[in-house]
Image 1 (tube, helix red, strand yellow):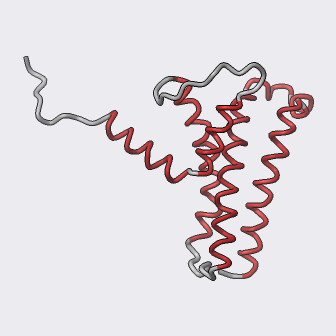
Image 2 (image 1 turned 90 degrees about the vertical axis):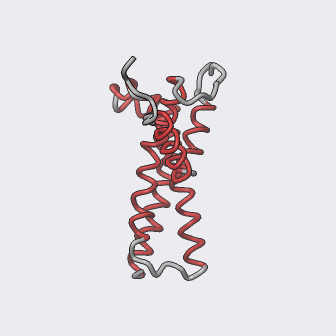
Image 3 (image 1 turned 180 degrees about the vertical axis):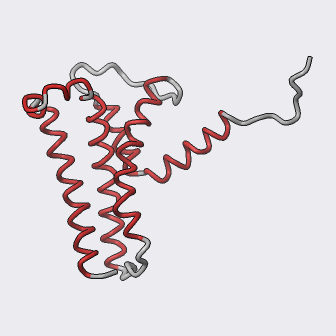
Length: 155
C-alpha cells in the first residue's frame, strides 16, 4: 500500500472517529438543532448513526494500526475495508436498534428518561462488531425466511 494511501486511510478513520464524537456532542447539547432545526425529526436515529460510526471507526483504526505494526498492509484490497466498513457500520447500527425496538430482535431496554444510553451502547457494539452482527443477521434472516420443502400446501 502506498504511503499516501496509508496516510489517507489513517486520517479518514481518525476524522470519522473524533468527528463522530464531536457530532454526537453537538447533537446532545442541541447545537445542531440551532443551526438545522429540522434535524430534530431524525435526532434519535442520528444518535445511533454516530454511535455506530464511533464503534466502526474505532475497530478499523485498531485493525489498521495492528496491520501496520505487523507490516501486513500490502494488500490493496484492504483499503476498501478500511474506507467502507465504518460507513456500513453506521447504517447497520441504526437498523439494529430499530430491529430491537420493533421487537423483531429481542433485547429489553429500560425506559430512558432523557437519553437512550442502552440503545447508544448497542449501536456502538454493532458498529464495532459490524462483521459479526451482519453474520448473525444473515443467520436470523435464513431462519426467518426458511421454506419447508417437506410440507405441501394442499389440505
